[in-house]
Length: 329
Length: 293
Ligand SMILES: Nc1ncnc2c1ncn2[C@@H]1O[C@H](COP(=O)(O)OP(=O)(O)OP(=O)(O)O)[C@@H](O)[C@H]1O
Ligand SMILES: [Mg+2]
Image 1 (cartoon, rainbow over the protein chains, first blue to last red):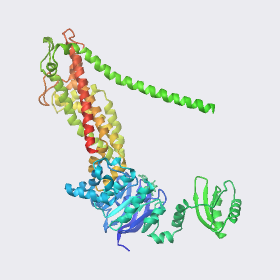
Image 2 (image 1 turned 135 degrees about the vertical axis):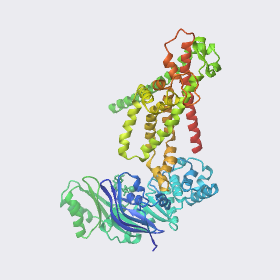
Image 3 (image 1 turned 30 degrees about the horizontal axis):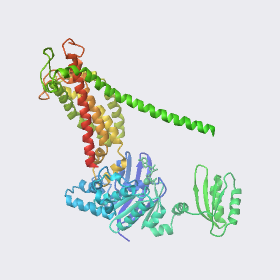
Image 4 (image 1 turned 120 degrees about the horizontal axis):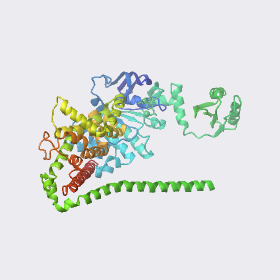
C-alpha cells in the first residue's frame, strides 16, 4: 500500500443552490491509478476539478471541507494556486491544444513558470513528446500549429503539455472518450507507464477501462460517495448494492441476450408468468431480457424472480415508461 | 412518389434561387464600392490633370482662390486625429473588453453591454456637442485642437471596438482557457497568451472596423479640432482633417476653378487612406498568424 497522496475531508460542492457533492471523505493513494466511476451527472468532474481548484473558475460555486495534498490544505485562501496547479496536471475530456505551435504548446507551462533557457526548453519538449510517443510523428514539424494534428495526437500533446511542468499528480477527465480505440489504447498504455512516477486520478464512464487501469476505485452516485477501496475488492466483492448494480449495469451493454421479451402493456402478474414461461425454455445460465412498462412489475418482478432462484442482473429505466430487466437462469 | 418528386424539385429550385440571389446581392454590394471609387476618380480628374500629384499630396499651401491646392495639412490632420484616437482607444477598448469577457461577473456584463451598444448608436453630432461643452465649460480647458478631436473620436470608437471585441473574446472555448489555467497560468497570463491569441483575427476585424469609421468621422471631429489648414506638429495644435474640409466647403465657393474637383479629390484621398489601412492591417494579421501558426 502506498502512502496517501490526496485526502479529502467532508468536501461539499454547490453550484448556486444545487448540491453537486455531499460530504465526501476519502483518501487517494500515491503512485497508483485511482478511477472515479459513476453515472452521468454524479459529480465526477466536480470532484476532479476541486482537487486543482479549477472549480473556482465557474461562477457561483461554493466549496466547503478540506482537501489535503501532501499534507497541505489546498482550500487555504493564502495558497498559491499557480504552484498547486503546477503540481497537479489535468488532461481534459476533449483534446484542447492551445492556439499555438506544437512546440509552444509543450513549452507553454515551463515558460509560464519562468524557464527562458532555450536549450532547457528544447530538452523538455523533446522529453515530454517522447514520453507520450509523439516525438517521432512531429519532430519535423514542431513549428506547425497544434490544431493540425489528429485528435488522438492532440490528446497525447495535451498529456505532454501537462507533463512539461513536472507535476506529481495527474487528473484525467474521461481522457479517451473522444478518441478512437487505437488512440485510447495508446493513452491508457501511457497512463500505466506513468503511474510509477505520478499519482493518477482518472474519471471514466467505461467500466472496462476502470478494470484495466485502476488500482483504487471511487464510486459516486448523485453526489454521494457510495464506495471506495482497492480495485480488486470493489470490482469483485462490492460492499454496496448500488456499486454492484452499477458495475453489472454497465457490463450489460456488452452482454448477449439469449432471449428478449417485450411485455409492454401486460399487467402483473401476467408479465411475471410470461417471463417464467420464457425462462423455462432457456438453458441453465442463459440470459433473458424483458421490457416492461407496468410500474408494479418493475419492483415485483425482480423480487419474484429472485425468490424463485433466478438471478436478476439488472433493472434499468430506458425511458419515461419502459424498464429493462435482465435475468439469468 | 409523385409528391416526393415534386417536393424534391421544389427544394432544388429554392436552393438554386437562394444561391443566385445571394450572388447578386454580393455583386451589388461590392459594385457600390467600385462605383464610388470610379465616380470620385472621374470627378477629381480635372485637378489631377492640372496639377502634379506630388504637389497635391505634399504641398502645404492651401489657397484655392490663387489656384493652390496642397492637401498635406489635411492629410496630416486626419492622420494625427485618427492616430491619437487609436492610441487612446485601443488599450482602453481591449482591456475593458477583456475585463468584461473574462473577469466581470455576469451581472456586471449584463449591465455594461447594453450601455456600450447604446453608446455606439449615439449620433456623432451629439458627441461633438458634448465635446464642445466639455471644452468650453469644463475645468479641463484644452482648447480646439488635435487632442480634443482625438479624445472625442476615441470616445466614439471605444464602444464599438469594446463591444465587438468582447463578443470575440467570449467565443474562445472554455477548454483551452482551462488548459492554460491547469498548468498554473494566472488569469492574466491566460488572457494574454491564449484568449488574445485565439481571438486575434476577430479583434483585428473589430479594430479595423472601428478605425475605418474613425477615419471618416466628420461631425464630432469638425466641431472640436479647430479647423486650421496647417499640418499639426503636436497634439496641442489645431488641425483640419479631410472630412472637415469636405463638409465645411462642399457646395460653397463653387465658382472658384477646380475647387469642386479638389474637394472630390479630398474624398478620394480619404477613401484610399482607409483602403490602405485595411489592406495593411490584413497583411500584418496574416504575417503574425503565419509566425504563430
Ligand atoms: N456550471 C454548473 N452550473 C450548475 N450546475 C452544474 C455545473 N456543472 C455541473 N453541474 C451539475 O453538477 C452535477 C455534477 O456534475 P459533474 O459535471 O461533476 O458530473 P459528472 O459526473 O462529471 O458527469 P458526466 O459523467 O456526464 O461528465 C450535475 O448535476 C450537473 O448538472
Ligand atoms: Mg464529467
